[in-house]
Length: 273
Image 1 (cartoon, rainbow, N blue to C red):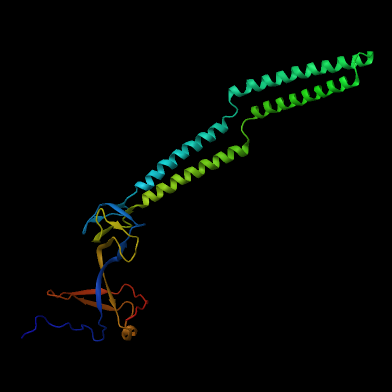
Image 2 (image 1 turned 90 degrees about the horizontal axis):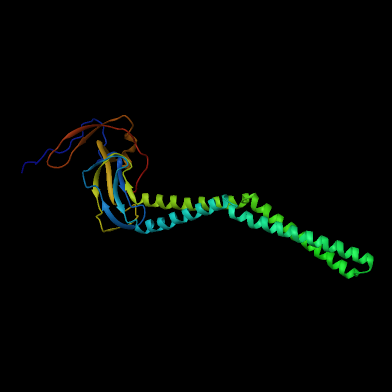
């Protein structure tokens, strides 16, 4: 019977024959889920044109959003703690401390007077040395109590201690960092296009469980504005291939078409037979 089509003939006097596959410019990009999870929505289909940054599919983020609610509440608590520390002392804290100082001053004055009376009585023989010693002890205790009351008042008037403010600020920063980390993880569950391309294959549907496996991509996209042909040359013919050499592609199948090609790069990586 006659041939259905003419056999492929090498158009060059010296040429290398190789089987090639057509791929998108910049190679086909396999998109996988960033982490295992339930697919909630698939936003594109095969042959859809997508721009860089367009959402492609989303994973279930309800667990992370519940964690985000708690983390946001922790930020509010940490911010309130910091503000409370900075606002010290409270206006109502000072009057009681001032009253304590006034009481301590009055007690000290009374103890001083009692000591003076006992000393005078001792000189006149109306008191014993033990009573004078007890009065001196009471005077010293009252003086110590006055010092303590004055120290408490000075501490309150000085406001918050700088290291306490730094600790509260660090706690707020940690809470805010936790919120930012959760927001980043939630945003990561929306897979977006890394570049403008065409959806070449779609292997997930809403309700399916996506796995984070580069060998099982959820989608494959590629830039079809310019097509490339990747040809694998036999190791025996490697020496005959050089950059800048002419090339011709011939399609296989019912429609045979010759396409002029240009070698744009040669990758030296050798794969096993």
